[in-house]
Length: 77
Image (cartoon, rainbow, N blue to C red; front, side, top):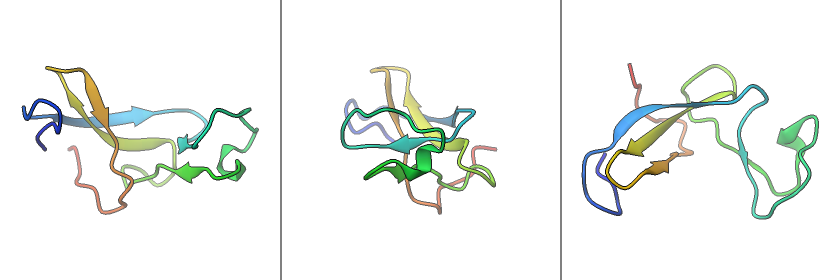
């Protein structure tokens, strides 16, 4: 994948978190079960059988990270 900021090649890897990854439109208290947060979107994209690991593209040139929320993301292996 090419970086949308600088157009250089991005490296596919992983972002991992013990309690699962979610995106929220505003800062809020993190619930014990974060998937139940108001307006939250789980970022699971097929990197693992759970929501604790997602594929992410990193640009070494401009230090941006992109997470595709699509569950059909390509394998990094």
